[in-house]
Length: 419
Image (cartoon, rainbow, N blue to C red; front, side, top):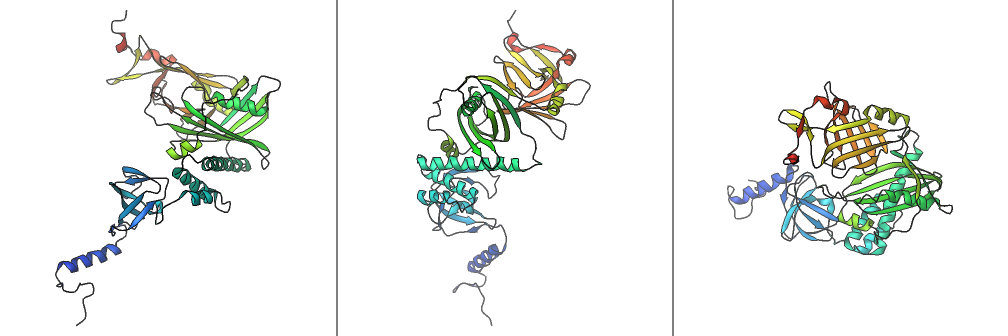
């Protein structure tokens, strides 16, 4: 009679030993099923800051964020590549590729970031992790900025080499006063203009000549705080080309991105003395130049739009007494356009830097640090949804000025007791 494989010595065929053995064998054959790991399996976090999640999915809730080099114990593994680990008093799931058997150290990671034989993406990843280990190391922070610029510059060069690439996201014409003003100092003055709105915490700029494309390339990085808003602070990255001299600068923005950076990336990109600003020349010209196609999209929207409020089943116009209930005024000129916002107590203007039409007919108006989207609603009245990426108080339903009379005016709550 043959032996019963997997039955421990001294256990009956129907005892618990067989059940455990069969279940263990079954778990090894079912894809995606987590398997227990010995508690002694030790690993280290190798990502700069790793999320531990409740379940082995990228959309699962984050239990805790664990910094690089933290020692943890593996408790379960799933065939999908997710491991459940325990780090001190916290446990959760993360991708196994973010873990390593050896503890990451600063010097090897910094050395990898300087290896020109490696792909740029791998070098950048290495220096981010090096900075996470040693945040104040000046050499690591300098290299991170250099590799960040190299990535952005590569995107611009690829766009310039592609004859089918779309038109620039923004086209800016500028000039500076002063006979001795250089093109570089004038350009820096132009870029500083965008940091004076009160919500830009710091700004950093790189400018260089590119022999490959015969133009000067720039990379502009700004850290934006939305004061009075629940939105997280964001990193804005503009890159493109600049040509001409201080009397006539031609600036084209070719790439634009914004995102919430990791603490490591934000700290490494931040200038050492963000509040120190050199003396720069005064601007004599500054305007975003729109194409005729962009102007044609904007002209039907020119004029004033009044904000509506929902009261029961009706849309009404609020007649406020101590604040501005809300209006958007779009002005379209020969080659430029601007938007004037009247919201609350602090009206302000944004120059339109670019215009784009979506497939559904909506029109996107870009400005330097944000955008305004217009989507017409169905009906015989000119009523539209305006959505701002910059100010949540602007977003809402608006009616064009000539149709405002068709909506009932209601006294706002602030008018109580006001004669």
